[in-house]
Length: 239
Image (cartoon, rainbow, N blue to C red; front, top):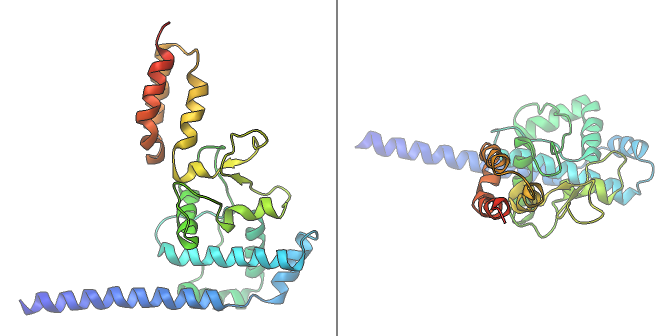
């Protein structure tokens, strides 16, 4: 009996220590002041940005580092912003400062991962999904039904970054054809609209193949599958 109580106390201590350490690391990131050399490099890369906009990019980098702490070292996290990725590059160039920051913020060196976005307007990678969910949690946004974009996903469009990643809550609307469906990262709403267009006029055998492929997709798509199957059955039904 005593060994069980001792084990429980030990586990509770581990949980508390981990929680306290994450709180401490997050507070360090929130208070951290980025070096002026990083600001200068961002301004050189994007000369059209004002000083306040350069600061927004740095705050986006701060958001990403907080997301890394929230992830607790599990899974891949993708960088959804080209501008913030450039800021990360600029920080890494200050090697000693970056190494010292990483040790205090993460307990280890945080290696750079190239910026990436969704593989198509409606299909997100696992890394993008994880970053989206944690960035939404950080800002108090409903990841499945977002009212607005997290800063990490909004910056490139807001700052008019050349070759930046543009996300939209409704990328299928007129004028948003070149953007990625951010709302589709956390829910399957957009998928229904896409399938509705695809299945019009299709043969029944082809429609069945669409359903099979959809079943192999993410859980996000599967949540919408019941509604999609009804839509497909109606569209495929002979007149």
